[in-house]
Length: 87
Image (cartoon, rainbow, N blue to C red):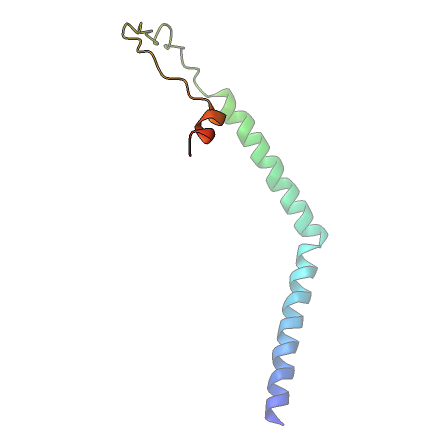
């Protein structure tokens, strides 16, 4: 008998938790607060983006090209010939 009462109380607590959580989440007050929060974040992003410093581009002529003098003749492999030579 006590075991059934204990399970009933557990189920009741879980259902009350789900009910009150859903009630708060879908309430108009929560929707207004979340909308205001998103709007404030957007305004802060716009304000901070105006104050960001713009850095100069200092990457002109950074890449140096090296000429390859030692060009060794590489053996070209043909895939099908490699399979045929596997005898």
